[in-house]
Image 1 (cartoon, rainbow, N blue to C red):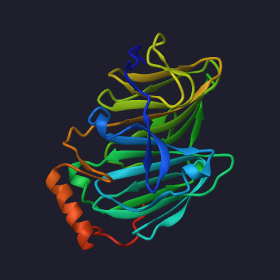
Image 2 (image 1 turned 90 degrees about the horizontal axis):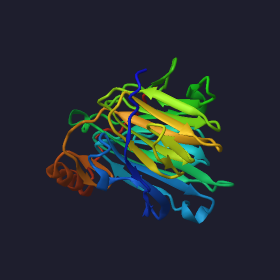
Image 3 (image 1 turned 30 degrees about the horizontal axis):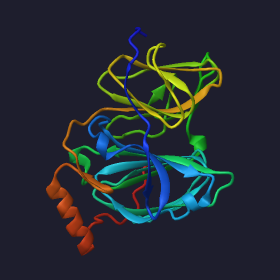
Length: 291
């Protein structure tokens, strides 16, 4: 590996907000950061030790034009959708849903002790796939390979490759990498990435230092956007650290955004709203589950 680690170009502390029926969460980045994170649109960090912060949940709501990725660290969330899929996302599980032409779903957290904690990432779909057939992937924690490096880093692979393993989520339009990385005290991490891919890290437990060794430390809850280079690098201090590393091929397409619907043009959003009012928003009603 050549010595050109991706530098840190921006850091985002996020902001508190209410979503769904009144769930308190921290938005790491969202609409205001388009197109910096292209093809990624939004990252929400949700969870609390207080059930009142999350039990209202995310009742039935529509999506079109994006993929939603729910990754649970602690606790459980019940879900259902207009394709007939339903179940529970438990600790370590991932729900990767491709909304395509339209899907209506709900995610309702259960009371969890001592806390509920998870992330939702929105991945943009290219124009050619925005009105495609919706699909659903539900993966249990045990399905994700874990690689341990010589330095003691523990890497859980949801999608993309690390070392000798490949994550089970494949065939996604933007060729995403999604890793959950835990570093021991003083541990280091490196991952080669295609130079054209957008890459960011979100610190779960920190601080973690990203980029060159002289770079700034990122505390828990901060999101770090990487610049160009041939690999992403990270290192931990005496307490160790944990972070999500996400990368993908940018689309370089216009973004028109209306709540949970993301298309390319305003006219497409207007059509989606008309269809919601007319009851014709959902085009596909049979279960479509991708393994």
